Amino acid sequence: MKQPTFNGRELLPLSVIDAAHAGDAEAMEQVLMYYESYIFKLCTRTLYDENGYPHVCVDEYMKRRLEIKLIHSIVKQEI
Image (cartoon, rainbow, N blue to C red; front, side, top):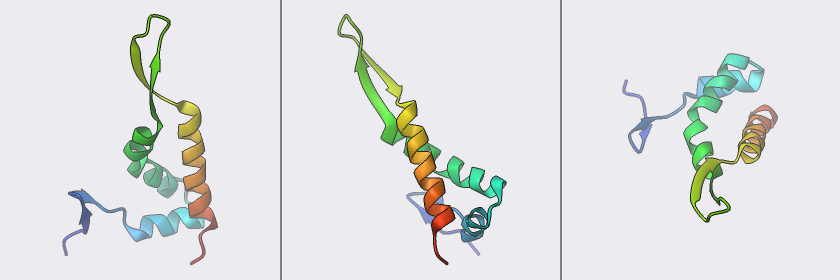
């Protein structure tokens, strides 16, 4: 059977999410890697230096907060 996709990207299998919920560290790492590009996109900021030149960077504090929220929501989900 063909894997379901969203915008051409394979969806994360439900079994991986269930394993992450059960406490499997490798499954949780798979979930974090799956959402990594989306989290990076949300945390990208444009900062300006003293000369007014823009620099695009990732807000590491925001990135960690989003990862923690994702982990918390997976661990606390009710099945």
